[in-house]
Length: 280
Image 1 (cartoon, rainbow, N blue to C red):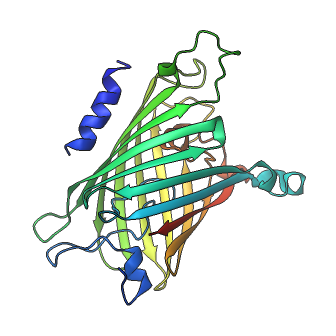
Image 2 (image 1 turned 60 degrees about the vertical axis):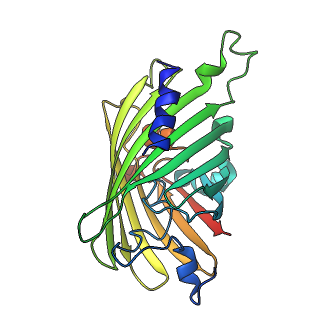
């Protein structure tokens, strides 16, 4: 099973400039008149991926932060003392395929991903469809503490299908079913295989701002964790998109975000952060 899943992830992956207005540069995936324009301006709703694809030979640099929980107030300066960071890069291999790598300070995680377009929204087809395949490598587990650990034990796989629809210039929605597999897990709080169904949306407020919302329901999740609920605000400024984030999940990997949300919104236990994308 451990050897089969990486191959399955890759199989799904491979089968499946400037403008006068800088906002158009951010949405530089060019479309024919028969296709709907991008449903989302950003590559993420908040943390969930969108169906937006980089253009061929286009680079994105990603810097993301999630601070600690705000519930401890000034004791941790509303979470700023406990920040986690993600640094990554995304490359448009073609107009329908992109590849990305990132490094996360939480669990010293490395993440590699493929996103691939499967269908376009048009007059003949009502949805935009993409696949997203992710491999996580947990380097936090040290050999000294876990002498029998093998490299394969560090791996987690995520397979997602992303289905979106642009209803108007102001409103876009998407549905994201996910399958998560861990080769090594906490027998008490984690399961080897988990399923999640996420949904997200974007409401355009002004020419340069939108309000984003996403939620994911985990099937048969451990009682300790919550279902992730996140709110974001997209701000488009020049050649980049800045996303303010409020979430009950601090992790930024797909697997961690979906299955390890520990915050409780009803108790003021949530995390503030941001995503910053710069396109080249």
